[in-house]
Length: 215
Picture 1 (tube, helix red, strand yellow):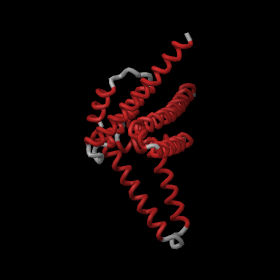
Picture 2: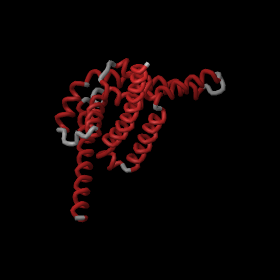
Picture 3: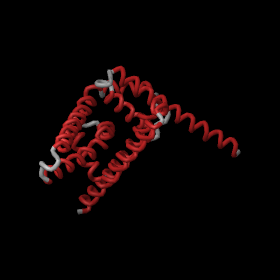
Picture 4: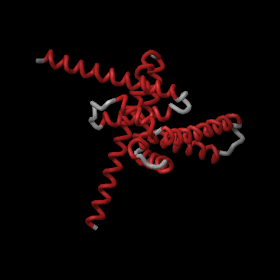
């Protein structure tokens, strides 16, 4: 019995490793099909969509069919969201270089404002794509919701940033592993933590409704 249980668990582990590697392969392939510039964000949304379904218990969903369907439907909107955030990120980086080049000439208020905005930006980015996948709302609402949810669950936003940075570093220390697992494992970590944020927000909303109902 113990031997059969071990084999079953080993088969389950192998199955999930295979699924994650396959999903990562699709992410790379469809990012390249869109020449990265157009393909990266819809491929990432498609990958997060599958991770979300897995985390909700849909372990037998057709991976390729679901990926392609999501990729096509999110092609324009995901690129709009992704490049808005990327554009803000580029502007922040340019401002950072300017601050570095003019150290001592810029007042503390400006520097503090920059770093505060940077923190808010990172909080928003940590939840932006999961919010897009989970709620399917307009781009502006997605950014607004990502910021609010990320700020209300700042510990989970930090957890997303730290876990992803750590895993990213680990994968690039072993490049052969990155080819098979970088995107898929980063996505499943991000989506799992983001779903924890969404559940906390939903609980707060339910409590408010209950209070209003009894008021």
